[in-house]
Length: 107
Image (cartoon, rainbow, N blue to C red):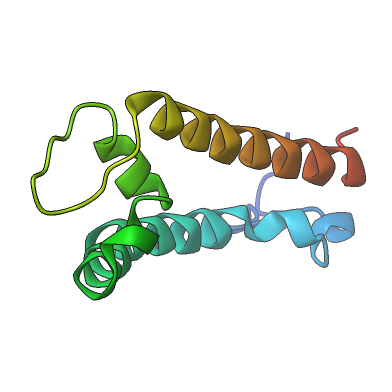
């Protein structure tokens, strides 16, 4: 409790030991990650699909389409291939997360 007449710390107060902590900017990193995901999903993948559908089917959005998409104009691998591609992306994301968390001191 503070003494009467002493000002209270500002609302954005952080302890002195955490000012240069790289994990203190997590909100900015999360916002950047969300923007990258939205731009990739709604801009980059559709653009790539117009350039080369054979490349697009190996990207996450294209692999998702392999589950039930039927086309008379494009060669589409079987749904099992789409599932394996998506499982590979999930494994890569899990591995990246595991390596990131083991490098940081969570204590």
